Image 1: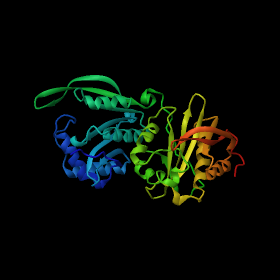
Image 2: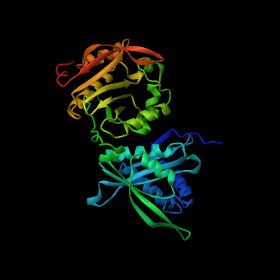
Image 3: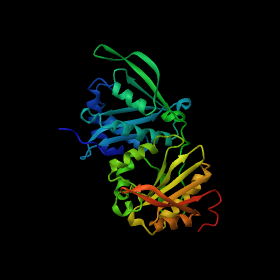
Image 4: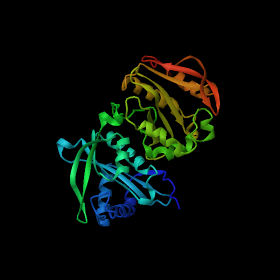
Length: 360
């Protein structure tokens, strides 16, 4: 029976320790992907997980519907001062769950976390006969650095390995965008803002795929799985990659709004703003506060010369948000996007540095 695709990629927690050990043990006993041939004792694993959680490590697990860990990935920094900017990848996926993109999603979540914590180099070592893993690493931008002869030995048989690396400044073969600093939103009491991560897909989908939200967008996403490719583009790390922040009530993992940019052009220093708010938070000023803060961030942090916005003609609420944030209407763009199978007209708004002054 085929195993269903896993949709839950989560930061590891201490509750995952026992299941994580079982997963690690299964992969280790294959004597193919890891250096060890069995998992450490449970007490050791529990301390390892505890320390990782306490240090906010880049450590994620894939879980099935029962909460069982079926894959993991982590990137831990080196401890010495001169190499503290370097991290090393560890990962594995249970045999029945391979080939479904789980490893890619786990590693992307780890890479994004590692960059956000200040790492600028990520290294790994992989056996030369592990071609699926090498293809995955190559797709994510890792480059080969060295061949290590007889680097591993199982049952008196030697195996060569390849060392690979990913540099933040070379991520995805392009110059990476600067690390995204947190956005200060002083007008939103009780909320925190952070860059979007791959594991946010489910929480985001819980409201952004609702009919009353989709009514005002051209989005065709219906499930969390539909949002994953969009988030993967956000995590690509290039200078022109989309950007997305999530807003969460303090002390909660719920996502109540997102704000960010697409159609980013580093050549022209322009972008288009986008935002959405969960219906139960409509009318609370959240969209205005997020739009205003993100616009200021775009001008001040990214140095953009123009930020534009487009809305369906019927989306009067969003138009009011933009006007309160200093955006000026530039006209109607006819047949601008296809919405539910039909071309639709949009209102075009834009702001340039200085437009926000005096906006209310």
